[in-house]
Image (cartoon, rainbow, N blue to C red; front, side, top):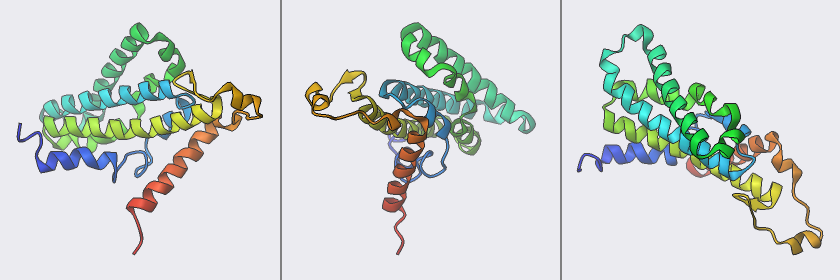
Length: 208
């Protein structure tokens, strides 16, 4: 139990959630941020899916890393990720079909998500299973946090809802308020991600 809460593992978990967020620092996973964040619900589901897949794929690759020939390591990593993505896709279709339809092909495209392949190559291939699991979950949560933030603002200002529930009263619309149609467009996701990156770097990378 002590090893789980060691200083090294805590650092592995915390960094991707703050200082080394994969979206904000390495600018990875931007395509899905544009595609699935028009509403909050699919953004949450996509974030959780990537977190689960990143965590399990990291563990699997870490366990078998010493048996993988160097020349085919990328192929092995892709096979592991593809298998997990297929499982997650089938689970979504079985238990959350409406969200699965909203996510469309983007669940399958998790296979090519740079965050997954980057963590497998940079971390899981050279570390033990426990740190690899922590690293995968943490990077997935860091990615999910950005999707949730962008999805919240886009749905709230673009539709007046949160998770499909109307939160802006009808009286506000009667007074002349109009939903911001720009928020429903993919370009706005890129602008919001850019603003979050700006705030993040201004906070963590202050110049002397």
